[in-house]
Image: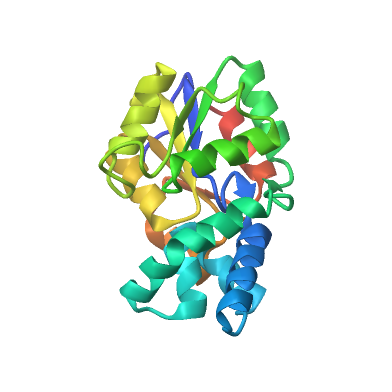
Length: 221
């Protein structure tokens, strides 16, 4: 395991399931799609676990694993997701304070998500983060997506920080793989969706089970 970078220069977050809890809006969009297509609405808890794997995984809860069916339903699902206004999406409790503490130290922070960049921007604007974030990388910003390290490295470049002095926080194994390959200290967000997994199995440099633990860890960097 790597040592915490000192002094800390940047903290980067995955979006859904790490920085923000967006599962209710995703489920509402899926329920609306199911209503249009005459499908049974999957239970919220089932959908919540899949959100970190993206819109296609969420859709799979309703339409099954056939990629053609998923791809056919995806544009309408995304329209319905935007139509929710993301009214239920919010930062996980305690993370606003984490961000404030990071900023008070002069440490830059950013978001690296596999969600489409336009949707990431909508979420950040909804929460009032758009003028505070130093780097935003969506799933369509580059040709590569996580678990490739390129998006994480790109975020570091946008923020003007060295990867070796940064931390990446995520709730999916792709986050840990990407962050590690990019040379960042990796932290698994144990409060996230996790998809039924034990985040320790991903071999991150640390696991924090609530934002308070994350804050205490970052104070040591």
